[in-house]
Picture 1 (cartoon, one colour):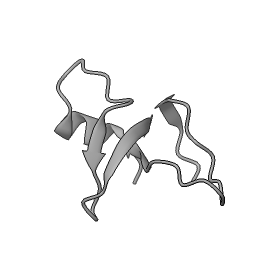
Picture 2 (picture 1 turned 180 degrees about the vertical axis):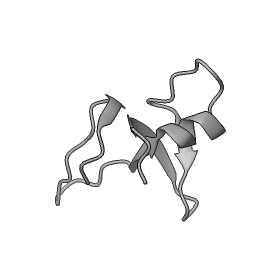
Picture 3 (picture 1 turned 90 degrees about the horizontal axis):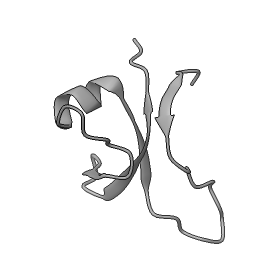
Length: 64
């Protein structure tokens, strides 16, 4: 999508033979709204829109 990645963890590549745990990339606004100030969000868990639990694997810059 061309949005600059600010922080990232070891994001698992998509593999057709192994089901990797769900991972999410969030933006700066998500971190501002849902994380405590100064707390690292990489590696923390969150529920996605389908109520599946996923691990936050990266933070991107806000975009329009």
